[in-house]
Length: 639
Image 1 (cartoon, rainbow, N blue to C red):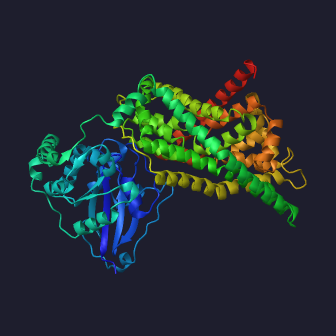
Image 2: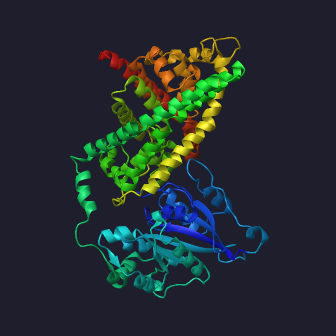
Image 3: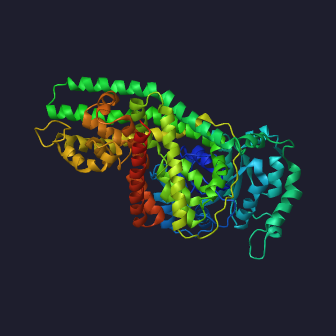
């Protein structure tokens, strides 16, 4: 029997643990990050608890109810009830990778057993996540929420960190003074979530309460007077909230990491360690998986099947898909390392490192976080650009983000580096990632001179505190992206390699994967475009074409054409391309057209297909020119 429906709306300042709390309450696996602005859309999750049907909405983080940036407008419109049902549905977020969340409802919605209450067929309760390490700033939003006439529950988060920092407070006294229920939680660990849910139910059963001190803090227009609110905090809350007296370790660490002499060497060292760990740890596992698929292919070759089916199974499915799946450990370790730098608080500080340099390019350092996110996937990285207030910066950020090397390109780098540069693989991969950053900088400079200014670029950002990364979140983050990688291997990549196999097998009677096949004819038609770049063999042209679907398909294409996995490719590829040509090929893969999903999100975020088409043309032109410079520059240097 359903006792009722409760809508929990999670609000709060950026980086206060809202998404962690949503994951904890609903069992979802949305990625969280230790920097402001991680959430840029409204997210929803659903569950049942003690007979109540819960809908949980995670709104983008904002310091105030007043809207300034794109993500703050979502919060503003939702809290004031200015979103229509269709707009609410379209704003509902995706559980990562563009996947729409499934709406889970209990049967009482259809039977009508849950009576209307509050704002609709549910009772709405606002849960504000509060970082107790910055209580004063967080409580400014609390007063704004109370002024809207909302049921409010405060979730005090990061209590362990506050204890380490020497911060002490009397939560019961603060709750009594504020006349608002308060619950202590640790969102990333799921601690005290039952107590929070019990408090939400209790609050939902009561009428909206307006604290008696609130009218004194309101302006004539009904908005909060910030100066009076700060004075209220000083007089009434401060006696029950004591901060540390000594200089915190964050400032001491920043004095070294953000120092003008050590900042960039430390950043380069961090990148090197990330790629070294990724490549070194994953290589034995990748080789083992590749060997397993090799043995599976040999076993399949001994099956009594028609030749055409045997070819599809061994050269197409096992050879093509297996060569991609074998790099799953590489993806897992890469995203595990990225999550480490995110959760530790270091990644958010790269914005400060780069801001002064970015100002010379006509944009602010705030554009750098979406660039770094592009190391994982360009799709969410481009969506994160919404947090930038300047339209000019948003457009530049969208156009240059595809130059950042996404995780899907890494298996291509790993394959070619293991074959052509086995002793310097880490350095070559790091060079590619740094080259992507440099090209993005240069493109930003050019675009900043073309796109008209709309407002002065500036950087205002709150540096997240340093935190010990929670290994559970890091594993979840890494596994989510690895699972998506494997899922693509079983769907998009499988479909692609079957098409490639068919083109390599037709017309009937020709040698499989030869120049006389359909795929060979197509490849020979395009290959001359890449001859000046050092990889004029038609197989690379075909691989680049199918790489537009997904960059992992480049490996699958080569493996399918040559009928084997990494071991076979290690024998065949050096016969058709030199090490210098392989390096030029990797630079082309780094910079040429993004995948079809990225092109689609570019169109969605800009609202025009023209920008997506310009993006494709720009990337192809830049990739061709850079690859030409790499190849011919290397020849001049004697390589």
